[in-house]
Each structure stands twice: as structure tokens, then as C-alpha cells.
Image (cartoon, rainbow, N blue to C red):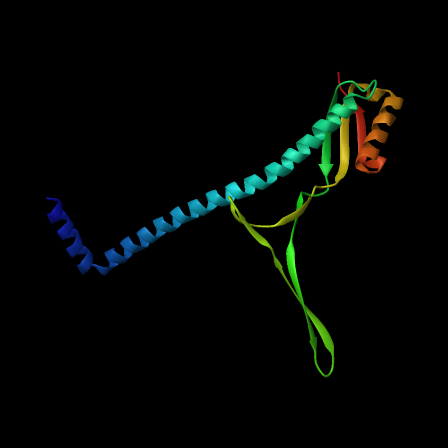
Length: 177
């Protein structure tokens, strides 16, 4: 039964070139859709891994600042939000070769640089020399004691000294309620 059906289908496909072309285009379309889904999934997993490290760093700094503000006498409970100037920057090691070239008319140096690649469990990656975490560009603090100008000034001075930012970029306001 299956053999007869298969033979009839093969005969029909061999005789009708349009049907064969439509079938081939359909299979190719399904393959492209499948491949795009696989690529999209891998891209999302790579992109989501990077921001999480930066987000963890930012949350950690906010949590430490909140603890510090709450430890200032009279400040009370606090909520803190920090605005960062950029995201984390990674600096990778480079191997640099310099060649001196001399000819009759001039001297010149050619410099060639390439990143140093290391192999580890995750595959091949560049050799990280340092990670530059983002600078703080602004801070907002909402706390119970911000109604007292002396406490407010202490908080502003502490944050300004801690992050080396101008007091104009620090807002301290009293908590509602």
C-alpha cells in the first residue's frame, strides 16, 4: 500500500516540474525558518549574559550606597538610584610587531597588532587585561531624614566624595509618609 502511494507520488513529481519546484521551495523555506530560530536563540543568550554582569555590578554599588546612607546619623531608611555614565569596558591584550623600513627617500615604521587569543572551557576568547567599570554620573537618594538640612548636606558630601561627582548631580529628598 505504501509502496504504491510512494511510486505514484514519484511519478507525479517527475512529470510535473512546477510541483517539484514548489515542493523544493517549501522545504528550503522551512529550513531557513529553522536556521533563523536557532541563530536568534543563540544571539539572545549571548546578549543576555553581558548585561547581567553590568546589572549585578550596578545593583551591588546601589546596595552598598544604601547601607552607607542609612548608617549616617539621622538619615533613616533610604532608597538609592545611581545613573552610570556608560557600561563596563573590557580591555584585551594585543601583540604588537614593529618593522623599520628604510629606503632612499625616507624611513618608516610599520606596526602590526593582533589580539592575543586564549583557549579555555568556553572556547577561544581574547586575553582580558583589565575591566573598566563605569563611572557614576548621578545619584538620587530618598530618605527619612532628608528634611533636615544638616543631614541632607552630610549625605551630599558623602556621595560627592565617594563617587567624585559634583553636588549638582546628587539629589537628596525626604521620603513621603
